[in-house]
Structure formats: C-alpha cells, structure tokens
Image (cartoon, rainbow, N blue to C red; front, side, top):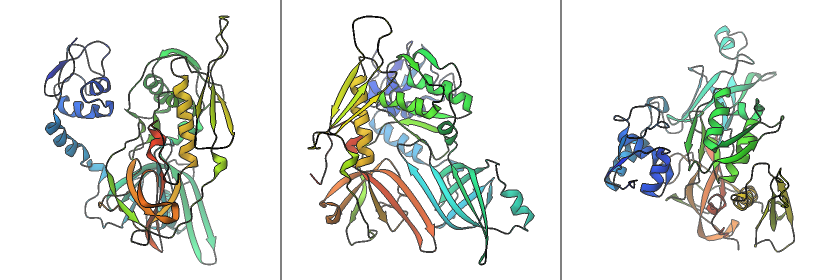
Length: 425
C-alpha cells in the first residue's frame, strides 16, 4: 500500500477516509479539508465523508496549503454581510432584522450549546412584529457582529414585559444543538463495533442535525451502552472523552467534533493598557483533586478479572483529594486515556479565568474567537511576565455602554493532554 506523501498522488484503499490520509500526510487529521478542497472536483461523491477505493488524490505541498487555507478562511455568502460597521450587531429573526436594546452572545469550545439573550423593542399592537415574535415557534436566528456570522440559533424563550417605562421583549435561544442536550436517546440503547463518528451520525440523523468531524476518528468501541434517561449529548460526550475529542457547535449551528488548537497568539493584552478592563479573578482550590479514578465495566463473562480502572494524578494539589467516576464503555486500551481526559476536563473548569476586554476585536483585528491563543500580562492574576492562554469561551456584550467581551481563559494544556503549565506555580 502506498503512503500519502506531499506533492504526490495517493490511491485510496478500503478503510480510508480523508482524516486518516491527512494524518498520514501531514501528521494532523484536521487537515482533511485541505485534501477535500484540492480534490473535490475529481471525486465521485460531493460528500467528503465518502471516498472510494481506487480514487486518486493529489496531496498538496506547503505552498499549496497556504493558498487553500486562504480560500477556506474566506466567509461564505451567508456568513458575511458587507457594509456593516465594526461595532454593529445584526439580529435576524426568520430572516428579518430586529432592533435590539441589548444583547449577550456566548460561544464556547467545550459545551454543545452556544446561546444568546437579547432585549428587543416591543410594541404589542404592531401586528407584523407580533407575527415575527411568537412563543414556541423555535424560529431561526442569525446573529452577525461587524457583518460576520457569530451564531446560528433558535428562539426557545420569549419573555414580554410591560412596565411603567414601556414595553420590551426578551428573547433567549441556543444553537440547534440544544435539542440533543435535552433529548434522550431512542432505542437501540446498545450497539457494537462503532466509531465515535459512526455513533454520532446515527444519533444526529434522528435529531435532524448536521455534523462536522474535525478530529481523528479513533478506533471502534467494542460496545457502547446508553441509559434510558441519558441524553444524546451526554452519551456522545462520554465517548468523546475517551477519544480526547471536544464537542461544540459551529457558527452555522452544526455539531462539531474537534481537538484544541495551540497556534499563534492573536496578540497581547497588558494590564492598565487598552483593551484591558478592571477584573476580579477567583482561584478555587476546592474545584481540584489530587487523584481522578475512572472505573470501567466489569466483564460479563467470569474471567477472574475485576472491573477496569485507571487513575490520573494532579501533582500540583498538595492535599489528598480523591474523585471517582464510573463509565460504561471503557476498554483496557483506553481507560487510562479516559482518566487523563477527565482530569483535564475538571481542570478546564477549575482553572478558567473570566477576563473582561473593552472590544469585540483582538489586537490582530479579528473578532475574538474561542479555541485561539491570547498573551496576557497582568500582575493581578500572577502573570506579570506574560502567559499564553487558550480562549475557551467568548461572551460578546452589546448595551448602553457600547461593546465589550468577557474571555474565559485557561492554560492550553488542559485540552491537549500535555503536562499543564500554571503561571501561578
């Protein structure tokens, strides 16, 4: 079998997919889009998940990749509205723009739902406005900041208010992926010999959701089992944790499976200099544990073996603090990885610092985005010489004070599995 090599052609064999080929050619399965962009006009299927044995792919070289990357970064026609001011928010409900008094939009890299809460002008006697805003419509919303699409969602909560100062209506919503966070799994509850991607596609089809798989698919699970009251998301998360994969949503409302990126910093924020704002941080030692124990299933057959188990340590916690969790789908080959990833997820919550900034835009001029790196110099949070944080959450704010954001910052290694660097240590 030939090897996928940059600058050469590669013939697809049985069992191949673009992620596997990208991992072989570039060492990074997330570069499957490079292969797809370079070859999509010559492949039989318009679905990047379907390539066939015998098809021939060209494996782009580094110069080719730079050109393709530039094309991939261009916003699609539905992702950009030209002519908007940088600090302008555009809220489209069922395709019609709605005037806002205030807004908060949250995007995260490690939860399945992104959300929004807005307050709109409200006149109950306006029949067109009443038709546009109706309870229980689950109507589609698109939110743009400076003309760039930041969230596609649906309205789940409508709260009209009448007071002495007038009328208003609050709308709250989430990306469509909220449905799998709320809905339980339909039978069959147990399947055998499936990958994370295969399991996700089967469950998402019943929920009417599209997905993007931007991670290494990993090995098959021998058996996966869900509880009757388990939600689709909780079930997929329990599998994703064992493959060191994060689950979130795209700006178009799709479910995305991916891995954290440790790339170039989008710039430096320095204490007392714009766009730095006043902040209050909290370092809570009760949210960390010295040992994380994962217990897997007990073998059904009497083999003399006990249940599988593994322990991951946090050696920076000097106290004996122990946490145990049981999983139903671990195997001897991945239970240690599952324990280490559970520790990382716990640390991602424990080590998050909420950091307010007085602009929607990073120092490099781009909108703040989750899953990017920012350098912070702030004696207040013990990083006086500077530290590169990963942005795990961005909360965009629009109100009478103007525009600003709150960044959720963590040490990058909490999502990569590498030893965690803590600046305050």
